Length: 131
Image (cartoon, rainbow, N blue to C red; front, top):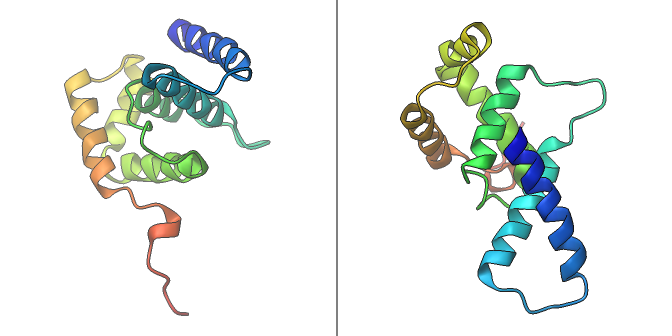
């Protein structure tokens, strides 16, 4: 959470600074994009708090760059599908996060998130099904 706070503070500072200029290098643009996704992830629906194990998985995906290529308007859809994917396929990991209070092996998490990334299909990209 310390890294997240520092990243968010850095984003806010950078965002304010870049309002006065238009020429941004790739690293600055990357930080701004990550900051926008961080803000989007931290927003929760009113009266719908996520369980801690889901917050851990979502924040891991955010911090390790798995959401960097997801369009900002699809972040919520990404989170919803990610958690459905975890509950359906890796529920034991969610349970371990709660009971053991530790993250699974980084290599395992990266493998799972890479697998999900290949399967993620934004709502707007899904074929419409006739009723």
